[in-house]
Length: 547
Image 1 (tube, one colour):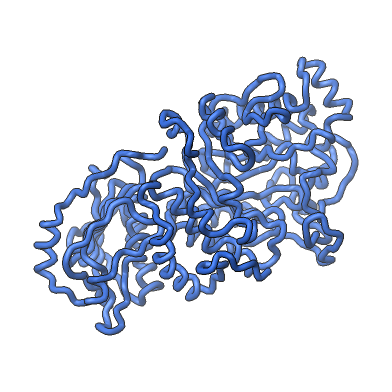
Image 2 (image 1 turned 90 degrees about the vertical axis):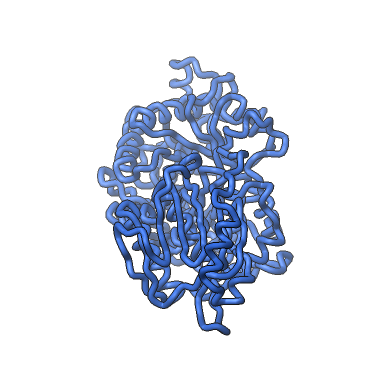
């Protein structure tokens, strides 16, 4: 939910100035350099002088922040070659992590005060972690004075939205564990908190399901790969890969340390050809198919959602998924269902007659609501793309031809169409994640989606009545991989636009400024250069793609 009531600066500037006077400035550069933090904090104020961080720095913290203190120690060593001396259960140190229960009005809220010491305060570990991410970007390397230092001042900060996601499509082109961890690290730096893991699609099934081993034995492999949209040229080399459940547990633990929730997406009823290639009885057509090597919404087959065996299969898959993933939300995709596959199916027609279902969009709505009920029975919420239960004629989100609607509690991820559809869905009570493709689809080239367009993305549409703002729970950045076959292309497409969307999700719109963002971006570019992460146009956004 977006918050419009600012948090007051809790310490007076006079008190900070008096404290700073006890610690003479040891870095003129730091003392005169503003905080260059992405996403930009909500409130910042500066006082005189700077605080030096010595080569060996003490870090005091209560026991409940031990994990965050350990992460800070690693960050200081990796980023700055500084050795941190951890002082558990202590309140005195050059860097102090402090519990402040008063900072509990907004999840993730934190405060930083620098006045000779550096104090990061929050009500919980998440807020402390976000404060640490800001501190990493505040540190100045003053080569003239040969010191690391932070300008004295105060930051009060909190997220504008509680849902700030990044989607990695691992299904179409498998990206692997190393890249997943790189994205989790950069999400943490940018205070993004939902890793949306797209694990199944037509050209690949990437998650081990122990009850159905053919999903990975067959569904994770294809014999070639289409090279361009509607093109006839293919890379003749086989492509494959999947994550074992043990590997997924490793990712989940890695994300948890970084206060990131991993939300799986298991596509249904469309984009399911890899599953049908593995178990042909899942399909509506009823024929053996191979895992597609092309990328298209025009599927050869779709799940036969009228067959109790298929529903039982999906329940089994969801059971294993929910046993693995603690995410309170499970994404079922639901986009681009190919009704042509269902149109000529005797099984579909029979089910429609027996259940008095008049149209194929109502067949999808019926199926989606059954999945919603099952997921809800496990204490979770279902999420889907804005295609789910949509009237194909009026393009109304969550309403099928008959007027039937998605179940209450469904979360809708808006991705394409008229922005007015968001207002309609919000009025009917649905929570919405705004992932409007023309602002957030990072697979688009930089001519189609310049950096500035991503930065100017406001998850709340301009004409949405204020009373409905709370229904927009956040926004997402999506990296689809149809045409991304190398790590270099992947990073080029994702960075720096992921930083722009991170700021759209964290920073209140009245605190955003594209010029300031571009200045602040230089620090991140240096980090990415040092870490071997390539990126797309960060200066001249009219530059065309190199790929």
